[in-house]
Amino acid sequence: MVMAGTIIDEGAYVNILSSISWKVLGSPSLFPEMRNLTGFDKGTSRPLGILPNVPITLRGKTVHINVMVVQGPLDYNLLLGRDYIYCMRAIVSSLFRVMCFPHEGRVVKLVDQLSFPGSHISNSCTPSLSGLFMQGMSHRSPVRPLDKRE
Image (cartoon, rainbow, N blue to C red; front, side, top):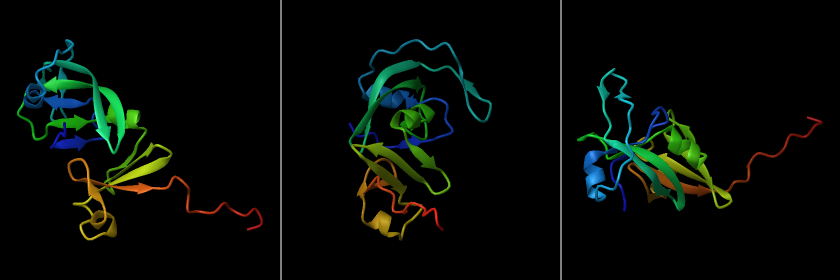
């Protein structure tokens, strides 16, 4: 299933799924969650529970993460936070709106097309997740090693 309205947020402590999206998935069983969720605005909410071991696939790489289900509606369907980024072994730049991660011996680079509308990167790429566009890259560095004589 493709999950439109997905946000990757390196500052988010947990992964969050809206209750509306959870219902679309068939309302699978949740583990109880006793902690309240506190937002940056200091508002708190009680999650409905934790959806365990959710497979998330991006550009052929699948990782399994726990996702907290919260009462919707939200501005997004799925928010992927630090746990997801760590599992993907990804490097994220919020400033440049780029995400890179290793997969099958190469580095996959995702670029937010909205940030770079006229670039050759966004024009030559295939759509992926929610505004992110991808480009495969070789894992070999284009920089030559330093010559000790220099």
